[in-house]
Length: 410
Image (cartoon, rainbow, N blue to C red; front, side):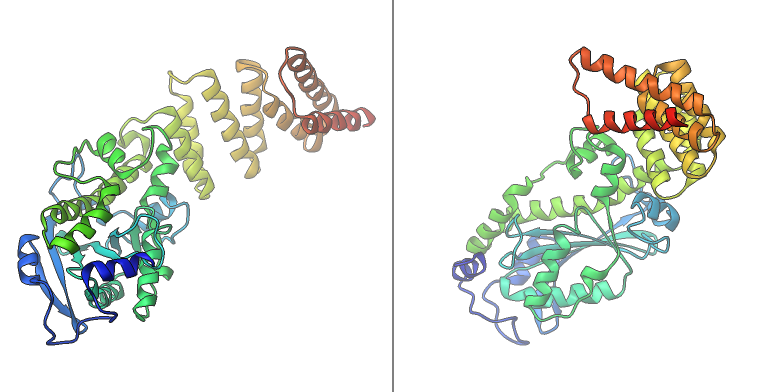
């Protein structure tokens, strides 16, 4: 027996897709709606509960207002998404989405009993939370959601591509509703956050980002792992106290997604106009710009980072090497040479920098003696490391040996 069958038995729900118009409900939906601060919504022959709230754009969510999110340029959105969405993507037109479900593992027996959506309208950010007062209301809720999707372009989620969107796609299919939700371009806030902050805060959960970036401490929240059981308990008792806490959790998730996006954009703009970041974060931002082919902006970030007086030697070497490879890729060979020479002559001997210089001298400058000397130094360093007990990659050593023999023949 799967979870769907168990829930039907628990709730004594017959196998049917939705409640027909005029049919009596087995629960007091108006009472439940009132207790949750929502309204009874009739749609597509069924009934569900909708909790609607408007948030003024000037209103702070932690440290951030939401006014700027609506106006973030599509080009910047594409960079933050590492070109997973096009420059036409607009948060102003997108639908923010987050689900609360009957199971954390997903699967065909998992219901999305609360679907939270957010969108910009006039001078407010509106959140709508669609709640299943009983399982047989699912078709009505999904049909309403599909109508909302049709009015917006693009999705914003937190790990939605891996969880929320596949789950909703399955629910649409099982209710025989044609939906293109899985084909919508999706800006995933989790992936964008990881590109910039990685494990700087220990992890990149939304609660952690709230605490570290937005300085928000939730009051009256519920742990995510408890949410499936809360809904099962609600189906037994029809008591809404804990469900109201789940609705609060869901609404905070949607608002926090928008606020974290604002923080991401703040880091992307001109370094002279944004908050101070750590060298590691600046390196990641420069790398992101480089990967999205924003060459001038990436070079500017690397050069700006090198001015940081608190940079360690290792961080300087990494930054110079990244800048050199950027110049090399775009055929600014003299600039690349300066970076590699700065590493070797002013910081310490670096095998990657020496190899790149050797390639440059051999193939571009035709300076065989210089290329030969650098290759010999690389092999000497590797030999010394091996004597000191450090393991060396045999393939790497062999490649350098082959290079040495080729240069000696030349």
